[in-house]
Amino acid sequence: MNAGFLRRSFSSLADILIVVLIVYLTFLLFGRLILRNQVDHFDEMYPPYQEMLDVYNDDLTAIGEEYTAQMTLAGDNDELKAEAQLAHQKKLQILEMQNTTDIEPFNRELSRYFLSIVYYFALGFLILVTIYALAFKGRTLGRKIMQVRLEGPVHSLSVFFHDVVFKYFFIIVVFVVSPYGGIALLFLSLIIDLVLISFTRKKATLRDILLKINVVKTGYGY
Image (cartoon, rainbow, N blue to C red; front, side):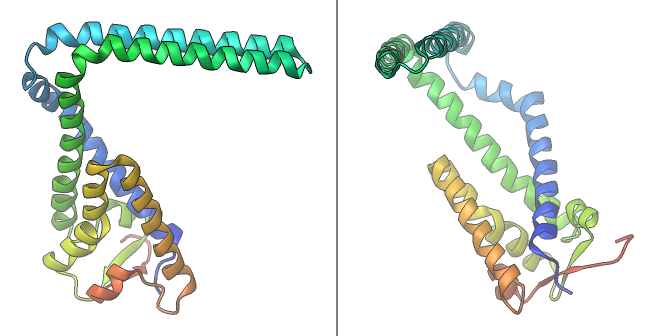
C-alpha cells in the first residue's frame, strides 16, 4: 500500500534535517573560515559592520517600544493613533536611510561573503543529499523512521533522479537565484504532491510515475 502524504513528508523532513545539520557542522568547522579568507580585510570590516547592525536593531526595538507605548496612551483616540503611526513611519524611514548609509562601504565585499554562504549551503546540501541517498540506496533514516520504502526499479540511477534531481535540485537552483522564488517553488511542489498522493487513484507523485517507483508503507523493523 502506498504511503500517505504526511508519512512521506515527515520522512523527507527528517532526512533534510540530518543533511542540513551535517552541512552546518562542516560550515562551523572549516567552511566559515574558508569563505572569510576569500574576503580581503574581513577581520577589519566585519566587527564594525556587525556593531552597526546591532545598533540598528537596538534602535529598531526602541522605536517599536515607543510606538507601542504611544498607541496604548492613545486609547480610543483615532487622531492620536494616526499621529503615532505617522511619527513611527517617519522614524523608521530615517533609521533605514541612516543604516543604509552606514553599511554602504562594507556592502560590496561583505555581500560577496553572505552570497558565498548561500552557495556553500546550496551546493553542500546537493552533494551531501546525493551521497546520503545513494549510500543508503534510498533506504534513508527518515524513511526507516517513518516506515516507508521505495519499491520498483530501485537502483543508483533511479534513486539519484527520484531523491535528488526531481525532489530538490530545481528548488535549490531557483532558491540560489531568488530565495523567495525557491520558497514559492517548494510550496508549489508540496501542494502538487499533496493533491497527487491524496486525491488520485495511483497515490503517486510525478517523480514516482516517471520513474515507475512506489513509496510504500512497510512493517516494523525496516
